Amino acid sequence: MQTTSDETLIARIANGDRLAMQVLFARHHVRIYRFILRLVHNQATAEDLISEVFLDIWRHAGKFEGRSAVTTWMLGIARFKTLSALRRRHEDELDEETAERVEDQADDPETALAKKDQGAVLRHCLTALSAEHREVIDLVYYHEKSVKEAAEIVGIPEATVKTRMFYARKKLSELLREQGVERGWP
Amino acid sequence: MNATNKAPERSEIEELLPWHAAGTLSRRDAQRVEEALAHDPELARRYALVREELSETIHLNESLGAPSPGAMEKLFARIDAEPTRGAGGAGRKIGAGISGFLAGLSPRTLAWSASAAAIAILLQAGFLADFALKQKAPSGFETASAPSTAPDVGAFTLIRFAPQASFDDIDKFLQANKLSIVAGPVPGGLYKVRVADNALPKTALDAVVKKLGQDKLVSFIVATQ
Image 1 (cartoon, each protein chain N blue to C red):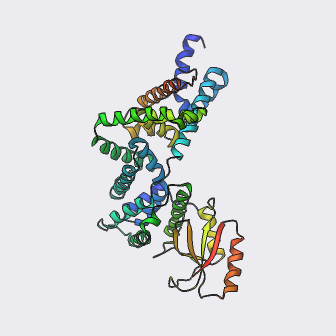
Image 2: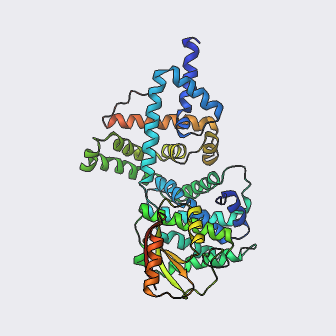
Image 3: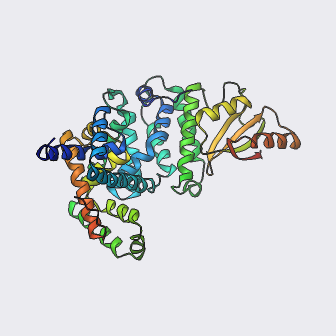
């Protein structure tokens, strides 16, 4: 027996099938939650947004045209909802939060201990990237989105996705260098 | 190819390395990257950096946990408040049943940590909901072979399925043993499973528990009321 495809679930949801909605939620909510959480850095906000995202999916399933994968469509909705929520917060406030987070972690004894592990340092630097850079890295590495799919989710040309990914990785190398890890690139 | 032409070519290939590591390139592009990696040690070294980034990005994301079950409850409460549309009547009942089940648990009980276990439970709940979707059961989770019986009639066990148990595995296990899931999952990933239509003497129920417990799909089983 094969599991029901995401496309079939969306078709059933468009017809008002709440059980199909539960299956879709169980299948994808964790990854979408993590995508949102990496952008908003607040679990309560991320949980609220998850509810908003899936409610939108419930309401607009009939508009899904199947031109992209269901996960790409859902991540696009999640991104839109997240950015709308972030716009309600002041940009400066966000920048300060990011700076404080990086500084705090750099001074933390646990972080200092973790620096002995290069993987931990890399993860630390991944959290210190800008939202734009975190987003593209997560979409490519964690959500396994192709150049075309990432471009569709973010709403930018494919060439820009490649360039943004390059600069995100370059920034990551700079942050690693600041933490004493020299990668010899770029 | 001379050095002048090689630099732009390497730059173009290098941009594709993250997608090559993630396995999301077209076959043609993947082949181009593979050929370049085979002949360019510096590019291969940079590819190792990309693979390291990919591994740690996955590690970081996986450490973020999952939303609490309250998120699902909240969502379905909002969906249930939406106007009914289409022919999803059966789904509505089941969705409402799950929401009702979750609502019946105390807030303390619902506040389970965002642990791997919680994720596994939700995923398994998804499996079982998917199963119910396929069976088009009017309410609750019952196998095609299981007789329709009132929820409180019969002999019952609490079962936790092994995390690696697939939808197919659970489906076959339930059908082969003429079992039906009547409730769950509750915190701890336990499902209440009917093992007989009528109450069984303790010795008979213990024998059933022992037999089912020997199946590799069952990580925990205990008799219950």
